[in-house]
Amino acid sequence: MAHIRAEIDRVDRELVRLFAERTAYIDRAAAIKGPMRLPARIPSRVEEVVANVRAEAAVHGLPPDLIEKLWRRLIDWSIAREEGVLGPEWPESTSEER
Image (cartoon, rainbow, N blue to C red; front, side, top):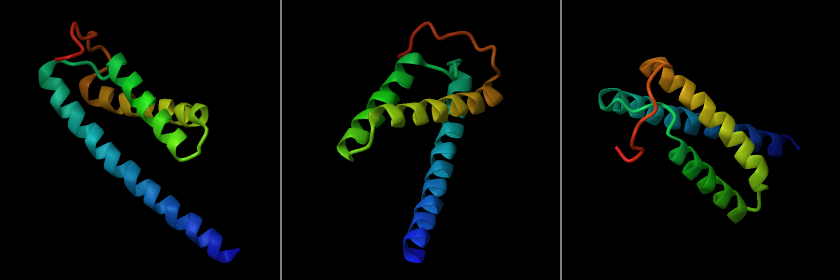
């Protein structure tokens, strides 16, 4: 049992590292969106990310509904982080393809 717990701890450390890497990309996106006057939340991108993770969950035998719930929380946190840079009052973009 100790070995299994150690492996779970190792995977958890790797997940945290990957979340930190993802956060660095979120910060880069916010830096790019500012000058382009893009909002933090772009609904079509949110749904694209959710569809991607649902499909990946299914490939790996995980429940897509659960993974979607987790990722929507992650996306909301990421958007809040971007809004910390951009400000929450950015107007919705007139074109999601900017």
